[in-house]
Length: 270
Ligand code: MF3
Ligand code: CO
Ligand code: CO
Image (tube, rainbow, N blue to C red):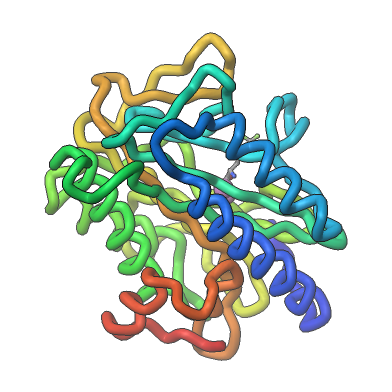
């Protein structure tokens, strides 16, 4: 179980979270037509290591690269490749995790490759729905909330938009390890599941599909694709509960998801 962390630990989580957020912003700046996902990987790797941190995915359970890059119908855990050249009209989730002084920060977002008008309606919609679903999840985060409250907020919104919620990959506790209990499903019933308490750190990272929520696994053992080839998008932040509210450890000052959550009435603490 994600243990209750001391204020010293939370300070360290804040440092790791900030670096993850800054790295993700840097990575987003690299996204453009003609760039390979391997080039993004290599620059992200350098950015993280130059700042005294470690790119957590590298060698994690055998993952071969430093960041996950999931394009179009890839749900998650896409492996950067020299052979994968970004094209105008693609969408790409970049999932950055760093280990700084032994603490983990984990954040991702889906970016458009090229101008908005070049992105198909299906890809644009699934991206918008995934982003809004994370903002809505933030609104239910407070001391004593339950994992099912998070899943319910995401599922009711996404399904009302005729999208589906991936079942087989979930958020997680995080701290001095990458993945801790409790698992945080992005679907579920209100007032059910584990209680989240002040001092816990965890991620929420909804993967939203335009079609079926089911996936198939590539033979590389990592890349999870939608079963029907339709688009998938994901956004992720790392959180801690403090006082009666929530702090977004991986958000930079101008984070649009946090701004949206604030508009919707989330109990955000700095
Ligand atoms: N960053 C992913 C998550 O949000 C996990 C990636 S594991 C890896 O939990 F090995 F694929 F990097
Ligand atoms: Co995560
Ligand atoms: Co992640």
